Amino acid sequence: MIRLATIGTSTITSQFVAALPQVPGIRLAGVFSRDSVRAAATAKGLGAAESWSELEAMLASTDVDAVYVASPNVVHYAQCRAALDAGKHVFVEKPAVVTVAEFEDLLGLARDRRVILFEGMRSAYDPGMDLVRHLLPEVGTIRRISFEYCQRSSRYDRVLAGQPVNIFDPAMAGGALNDLGVYCVSALVDLFGEPSRVAAAKVTVASGADGAGSALATYADCVAELAYSKITASDRPSQVEGELGTLTIDKIAEPTRIGLRLGSAPVQEHVVEKPAGNLAYEVERFVRLVAAGADPAPDQQRTLMTLRTMERIRTAADRL
Ligand SMILES: NC(=O)c1ccc[n+]([C@@H]2O[C@H](COP(=O)([O-])OP(=O)(O)OC[C@H]3O[C@@H](n4cnc5c(N)ncnc54)[C@H](OP(=O)(O)O)[C@@H]3O)[C@@H](O)[C@H]2O)c1
Image (tube, rainbow, N blue to C red; front, side, top):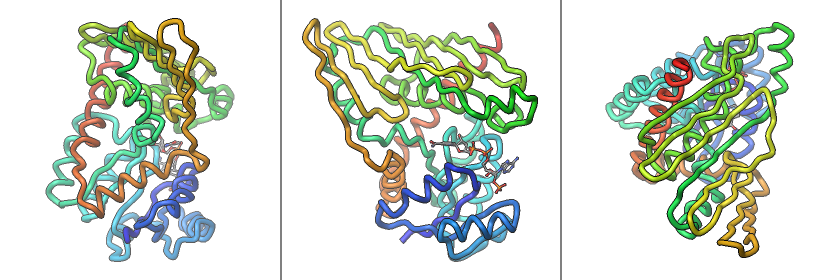
């Protein structure tokens, strides 16, 4: 049984912990918060036996085998490093870290300590994404890809009111690319590999972060458009267009309704039932890596390709 402790006390931690009982072999052991009162209250609310307000104490605990990291993106690296160094397996929320160099450093440490480093990219383990992968050959030679995730954040209102908000704070590695664009990039590199060339543009908001952006990624024989926004909403689906047909994906972070149109035939609609959301699938994969000795290299390679492509997008958008 993997005994897991959490870092971060926001909604995503509660949602993640709610998914744990769906997966055999893992349970919540305790909760860390920087604030001792919040640590104790969160532990009580989530049904955890222990709570800590000193990270060192949590990492020294022999009751903890693995750590879930759901803090602001810029904090991930130091917290993951400390956890790996203490011999704990790490499940870190997307994006795993901010730079490729940080991830490579953590990978080296994970290898030294013989523990697993895993990025919680929920879309990558969603059965809807398996179906997309399975259907791709049907559309023939792929020529155009458009992936998008544009959802206006309620926290944007606080930015407009001049208040500090982590997810819109560049110093916290917030912004649309890191928060939502990462799903588009991860799906792109996972399904099609790293692009040969990248161009990008962004919309900067008052906090200094990218509120929205677009990237153009090219391959030898196809072009991909990625669109992401935390300040506007879009209902447009993602698409993969091939010479024989088109695949339409309702949500790139959680593919659920997938349409396949071949030529002028009617759309074949596939619905992937996930009544409890898609967090349990990434937890299942983590358990397989930690407890069943599965090879983490493909998962880690996807994260590396994602981070490399995000760095290229950032550089291209800064240059424009
Ligand atoms: N997979 C998903 O669907 C999903 C959804 C949402 C978010 N996420 C990811 O989850 C992570 C957290 O995102 P969020 O929007 O929840 O972040 P957040 O609300 O800004 O912070 C999360 C937690 O981190 C701690 N924290 C806040 N500021 C901190 C700081 N400056 N230094 C250290 N700890 C700090 C806080 O816990 P304490 O004060 O109690 O320590 C807070 O509850 C991000 O990596 C994000 O990309 C994933």
